[in-house]
Image: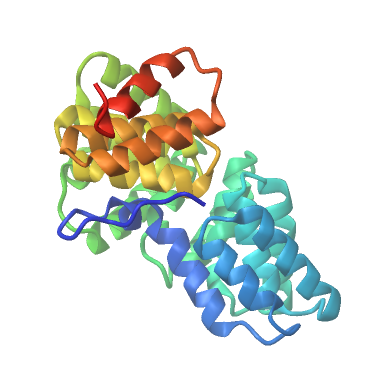
Length: 309
């Protein structure tokens, strides 16, 4: 998969975006058993590289040898989730929890997948348990309860989330709404709602507001390639190219064939003066989308970046 190394000193938005789920993946790897020689390890390696299909194949093969390995079911479920297959993710994550009731890590992924499928009751049950170990899950719990019109429950969950979160414009706005008992809160709505809100704000040149909306979308749906790519656009509009590049990197990690992110990261690198990285990104864009309407323009950019006139 085509990815760029993070620049020294640049903010690492990638970890802010998907930290919730990647923490769980790491804990699954720590507890993984040697189900079938090399297969779980290969799956974990593929996951770390964003090679979801290959990870799914490796974990599926491992389960043929040891079908009752909770850790492999959990990792397979996460691979399915990041591959945007929530239905398959639910099945595997449920299997992991049934085999090992202590797999709190799998429960957060299960909650996200259930919410993705519109099963708010199931998501709430999963988030209630996972939040005890992972406080960031209180945000998802509050959101699901708010969607269910349980305002008191949502306030309690959001309060727990705010207690464990560092101060930011987003937490200040949410905290104000909670103290004033004002609904809907800034966290209300589905990931798609926040995505559309961010796109609307970006179109109105409210880049800072768009950043907040896209980050909210990613808290609710960390596997959203579109939200991550749009987050990059919003950061670029604020002039924060390092954060923009990291957001585009995350989009490409989620889907290495998402051509728009290659074009966008190429533009960001070009603006930063990194001609080599920009040309490399544009090359990849044209490889994936050779018939793009701006293909001729991009080829001209590549020639200039590599020293041509």
